[in-house]
Image (cartoon, rainbow, N blue to C red; front, side, top):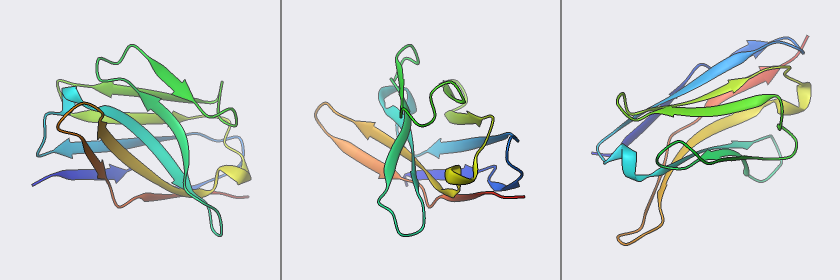
Length: 119
């Protein structure tokens, strides 16, 4: 059974930091690109950051470059999102995603964790 379980969300003041974790199980984690998406109230889900299966290549949304860092530990089947210098506009539900873009294709989602940036 495939599972992606996010944790680490919560309430933080502007300028603060949070580290999100994504625990994966039920599939070959090292063969999947891992990504973090977010969805703010009334907005569409957007890609925040992505990391290739080997962990060498990463990419970020312009809005989080220089503030967020995505990483993974293939030995532990974990993905992380370190978020620094948080802003109120970072408030959203953050989702972990695992994607395999070669056959057989697959795409898995976690249920999300809420991040609220507010004073």
